[in-house]
Length: 305
Image (cartoon, rainbow, N blue to C red; front, side):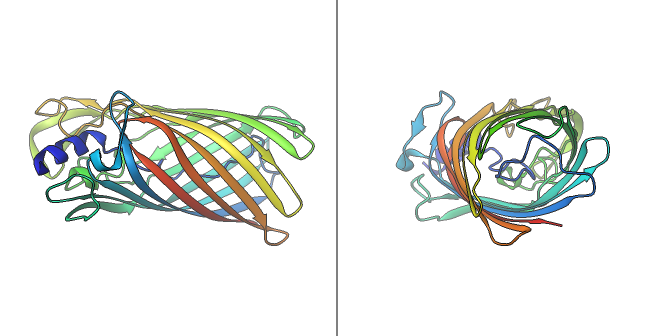
């Protein structure tokens, strides 16, 4: 039973966090030239089930282990001339899987597999296509620097926190406002470069092998109502990651399968001073494929400089 649970868990373990991507929404437009903002965000997530390769929900008792995740992300934004905005984000992540010795629910946690360390660093430039107004459109592109532990540096399968590969995200954000209410749409594509690996989860390979992590897609739609002291938002998002590929021995052992997740994220922003804001939110899983059913809570402090 224990071996069976470990095998199934290996097919379901995917990154619990999108590297260095804060939970809370950002404007489609750019900040004014010379303006700057810092945001420190923390998230906590825990699973109560999992979605298999057919998108069927496995109950908590039938799920291979209990997945937990933690993250801390620091993001800096600055407005530049020529309708540009620069953004840099990075942080720390921790994920763990608890398994029972005889069962699979992970309630007792007789076996714990854990991975922790820095998340990937994200640096982007955003360009606003329109002047600030009721309609805002922004195009964003940049680079994801592979700081997080990839499969070639991780000692175990569950110690992998990222792909260990360079990626170049591109995306577009649209927002339409009418008075205090706004509606927005955004989408992003993250192609990942292929590379050679000489190690695979702590074992040295006989020869360097090709490895290409799956590309990522994300989409979101939401509404936001801004008040003088309190703002509310509700977002529906979907994340898709293609399966890993490569000439790793033993077929696809240790390669992530195709994974998807969809979540509803209500959040509230509370203005604490003229320049500061406290944001609180939660992630409610709606659907998925090859991922744990993760319920998440998040908090952030945003400060305009």
